[in-house]
Length: 136
Image 1 (cartoon, rainbow, N blue to C red):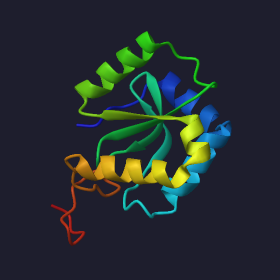
Image 2 (image 1 turned 30 degrees about the vertical axis):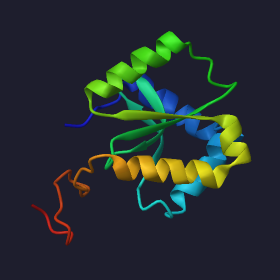
Image 3 (image 1 turned 90 degrees about the vertical axis):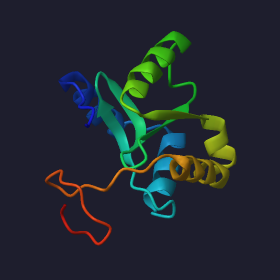
């Protein structure tokens, strides 16, 4: 089952996609280059929340934490509990680590995603596909 974003979260996600911070942009360019072997979405709406980066196959949320993230730890904990109920793990990365050690961060994201139980990829209609790309 897929967690669906609220209308408010979808609107905020659209806005945040246009206003990504420098660390978020750097990490996005690295993740979308395809070297991780995983597909990530940026500023993904999930329930009432917007996730910086989300890999559906690994059910992994990657958050770049820095000065622009004015969230309290109580808010972060509530969000993590909500996502955890959906089987989504949150990996928090300090913005300074993205700026100073981008490859190390990409390696951490890749190893964390690889260690998660992987879901079957889905086609555009939402049907699971076999390893050969055929619908099941």
